[in-house]
Length: 466
Ligand code: ARG
Figure 1 (cartoon, helix red, strand yellow):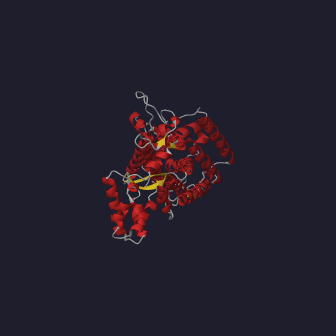
Figure 2 (figure 1 turned 120 degrees about the vertical axis):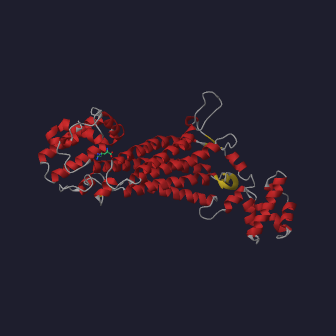
Figure 3 (figure 1 turned 180 degrees about the vertical axis):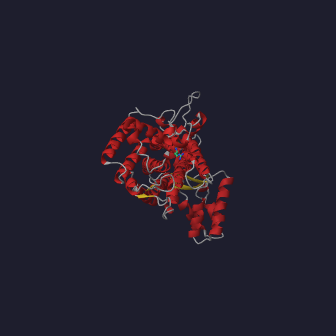
C-alpha cells in the first residue's frame, strides 16, 4: 500500500514499527470531509489547467461524490496500512475511480499544503461553533444579572470583604472576558482566512494551477503569500489553542467562585439538582462537579497549548513531520470545550441565589470603611486623614466585636473631632448603608445600579454584533 505513495525509489514498505509510529488516522480522520472538499477544488483547478479533460473531471467529481458517500455512511474507513487521512482517501479514490484516473489527482499538490489547509478549514468551522456556545454562556450570565436586580453582595479583594457590589456587577465581570474570547475567535478567523493549497511541498507548483480559485471554493478569501510559510507555519494553530486555553482559564475563575459560593459557609448560591451530583457514601452531599470539572479541565487546555508551543519551538522553516503533532492538541481542546460549555451554561442558567444572605453579608467585615473615608473627603478632610479616621472607626467597632453601624453618635463625634464639628460628624450615618454605598459608585464602570443597567445594555449590544 505504501508503495502506492512513494514506491519509486523504495525497495520495501515501512517496517511495522515505523508504520505504528507514523500512523495518524486514529485522530486525523475527522479531517476527511475537508480533504474531499479540497480534492474537489483541486480537481477543478486541474481541469482549468487542462490537466484533466472535461470528461475526466466529470468522472473525478462523481468518484469524489461516491467517496464522500462512503465516508458519510462509514462504508469506507481507514485501514491498518493507511498512514494518514490523505493516504486512506487516496486508496478509497483509486478503488472507485481506478488507478488511471484516480492517480491524476495527486498532481500539483502535496500532503504538506493539504494538511496545512485542512487544519485551517476544520478549526475555522469549530471556532464558529465555539463562539456560539460561548455566547450562550454569556446570555445565561446576562439573564442572571438581570434577575439579580439591585441585590448587593460582599465584594472581595484578596478574598476579604472589600466593598459592597451588586451581584449583577460581579456576574457581569465574568461576561466581559468571555466576550473577549469570542472576539479573539472572530479576529483569529479573519487572520486565518488565507489558503495554503497550491503551496505544494514548500516551493509552490509548476502546473499553472490557480490557488485563488481553490481558496475561494474552500471558504478562504485569499491565498497565503509565501508557500514555505503556508506549509510550515502553525502560529495560527497555536493562537487558536491559546484562545481555547484562555477560555478554560476564564471559565475556571467563574467555577472557583461558584464552588465557594456554593459551600455551606457561604451559602450564596444553590445549584439545580440536574446540574449537581451526589455522593455514593454521604447521602447529604450535593456537589458542584460541573464547576470542578471546568476548573480541572482548564489545566488540560493549558497543557495542550504548552505542548504545542514546545513542539513548534526551534523547528526549521519548512514542513517537518513534527508538525503532525499540532492536531491532537487542538482536537482535544475543541472536544473538551464542546462538551464542557453546554453543561456549564446549564449550571449557570439554573443556579439560584440567596438574596437575603447576600444582602446581609454585603456590609459586614467593615465593608463600608471606604465609604466613610470618601464621605470625610467630601466634607473637606484630606484623604490621608480620612483614611486614618475611618480606620479608627473600624478599630473601635472591631474591639467591641461590632459593625461600623453599631458605633454611636458619640463615637463618631469623638473620632472626627479634630476635623469636623459634632453636628456634621454624625452625618456619616447617611453612607452607612449598602444601598448608599453602591449608588455612590456612579462613574462609568462602577457598581451603581444605573451604571450596571447600562453595562448590561452594552453587553447585549456587543453580543448581537458578535
Ligand atoms: N500527516 C501529516 C501531518 O499531519 C501530513 C503528511 C505530510 N507527510 C510528509 N511526509 N510530508 O502533518
